Length: 582
Image (cartoon, rainbow, N blue to C red; front, side, top):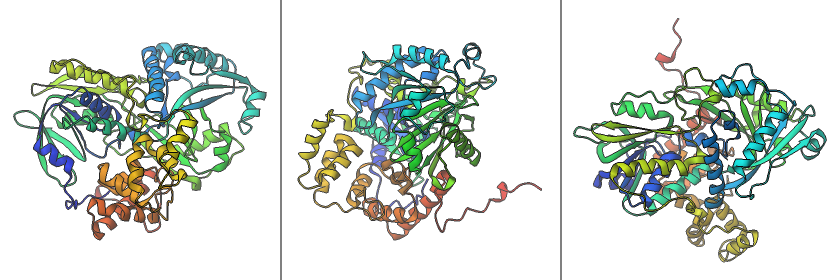
């Protein structure tokens, strides 16, 4: 996280609102997608609700996703039929209520055998022990896709899967490994800008009225005397108390750590680490032909090669992890990714020089004992306890695809304890910039043309793609002046200043990693950082010293956490306690 001095420059209005209104019906701890969605749901019911997040919104596990909204075909092997059904229903729903960010994704599975896994898969289903790694063959995948179609088709609007032999497969995707025997192709969905979708969910909740309040960089540090939660502003260091009738712990893989801070010892969580790399490799991008390549590697892990924003994202791993430690993509994981790329596209050369971004996160999975990571349930549950007599609901599990349904369940639990009933459902309710989003090419062309009187049609099109219909006030504001960044001309100086002022930006890192896709696409080097920092400094009240400190801190963060190395950055010397013992 970027440096945040006690002199923030301007008072954070969100903190002052909470200080003046420290009591609410529901307090949500955790501003990932599930906490934000629960905040939105409760706000739309008219509940007086507060959300706090110790870092930036959508900066933890929610920021390390595979950018997929999917039904979870692999969960069928785990016997998680309820989760698959809910996932495909929510996937189909998100395509309708968040069409600005959630798009259909054609997915192809390369298959190298006919019968492999037909014996081991039932044993894995019954025991949840991975056993000897064995790739799934065509027969097993065909059976799984037939079952998946029965869950997934949304009344026939989602195409059935397609199965092709070697000749047709290589004709469509000629760079695939010629040793394959078949391919299977089906449709799921992508979310190219998950952080921006999360911000839309937050915006919907805040827009419900003054009864909904949220603050980032506000950490729960303990239980308060007489009830409530002691919180600390991580920018200023100030502490104060918030009280509520119901407390929800939605802090993802850190649920146990949050409960420990509140004086409640729990052992609910057992998350695993998943890493990804992002490559700037035009040959690999072309080889995917716009499809996600999704398959099981020889070690039994599910992996993907995914075209995204003119880059190719490759993931993911599934390794035991400690949520108290930073999650980072290691060189061993990079070697693993290169091995699997070579397995699927052997003629496409890749190198470390082409990695523009790497990221890693911890999945919010339940404790799983000796169950192999790949077989740990991806379903979620809500554990009710009490904190000093106040109902405490701890969320265990959850994933991007099911955030709306999960939030509805979690909100219902809170409503029950408040003695309230649901007044409306979020099912079918458009999210943020998906509201009135043009659904056809002609409607999109009309929307753009009617708003391009002062900006070029290309710029309006870009803003619609980036923000959905929430771009409209931005378009009006930019009509008075819209200067492109020299280092990243697809973003504007005024555009970034407006985001900084209106989207609760605290650090330069917030802007680079979550309000924009600049870091993800490999534009996280010092010249870009300096220009972006200069663009947002006036809106955030930063002086020259603070602006320079933000640049230096973000250079270090992007190098340490995401592998974006920059001239002038020096790896810090190890602390005394980090040195090896002789």
